[in-house]
Image 1 (cartoon, rainbow, N blue to C red):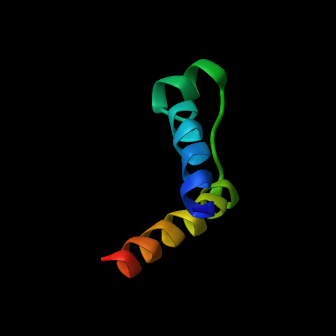
Image 2 (image 1 turned 30 degrees about the horizontal axis):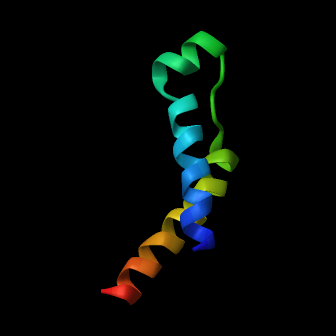
Image 3 (image 1 turned 30 degrees about the vertical axis):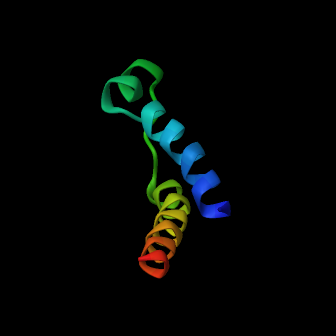
Length: 52
């Protein structure tokens, strides 16, 4: 559940970093930002694998 809750936040951030929004706001996520989001994605995938 914690990974699921975190992914809701990541989805909101994803919307923020949409290419058009990036241009509008001048935001460019770096490697570290992407790395912070990858762990929860793996957590959700692990949860899905376990529940299958």
